[in-house]
Length: 338
Ligand code: NAD
Ligand code: TYD
Image (cartoon, rainbow, N blue to C red; front, side, top):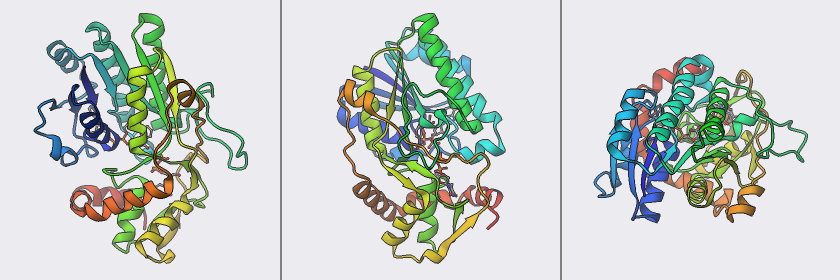
């Protein structure tokens, strides 16, 4: 199979490229990425010369470019990871989220239809369901939960999901969608909570906790997410949505305390700062459908996965220090008043 992976230089995309090259050496991967602030080819340096892999720089929302790429490459499968992904950035600049996440998806759908791909897979998020109350531990997101978004990020992801489903119903395009909970693991950009707290604690800097720190996220190791997408590509039913999650709910403070403990740093680094606007309270996935239909189960427990992830960040300081030394400092100063 020839697979187009978009956003393959980002966190989950680069883990997916690594996963697929190892698991399916018979497949060919083309990685299309615009290399925004979040894209980093250093994450793929070890596979850059692989025979069955190549990188193309480009914008998924550039329709002409996408059309000519598809006409040249004849992809069998498209997996769309490319997106603007940080909720805080979507609050300060929503426009680019609509452009990339909605219009970019449309350009890929049109080309997939025109050039006859056998599967278009949209990588989506549980954030399209909005949030659950903190006190109702019995409630979970199923695939039937209504879309009810909170941030411009999640609204743009919900918009693209609806477009994907419309191309199935209207044009018969063979699509699937996965909606995963929060991922953690190697190569995550240090604006997201876990690597942000790790890198700052490592440098003895204060840790900005939004609101009370009691918001709950449902954490899944990135490799379990990659395995689930691979399974959906091969066995998932066309036109279907699959939720992905491992029943791993933690409050933000629980995760931050664990990071501090692993690094042997004091809790006095914690600073409670102004809450995020529209901050979702709790995410929790019911993964019964993917478990039942496709036999997927996560391999990592949070306890093992988070320790391995912390060890990875310890061993790969060059990777994140490189990022911290660039534009990131300006971003942090603009976003946080600490
Ligand atoms: P990321 O921000 O780390 O990476 C996004 C990648 O997309 C970057 O390499 C960036 O350069 C590229 N990109 C951005 N705009 C582009 C454009 N116009 N054209 C081509 N490439 C472009 O994101 P991530 O955390 O790896 O998330 C990947 C996907 O998974 C997203 O669609 C996101 O919504 C979804 N998702 C993420 C999580 C999570 O916890 N990170 C959870 C569930 C779903
Ligand atoms: P984040 O990694 O941005 O993922 P998402 O908002 O998509 O779930 O944030 C995870 C949680 O951590 C979320 O509840 C917001 C919180 N958070 C902080 O408390 N401080 C921070 O500096 C950041 C980036 C996030």
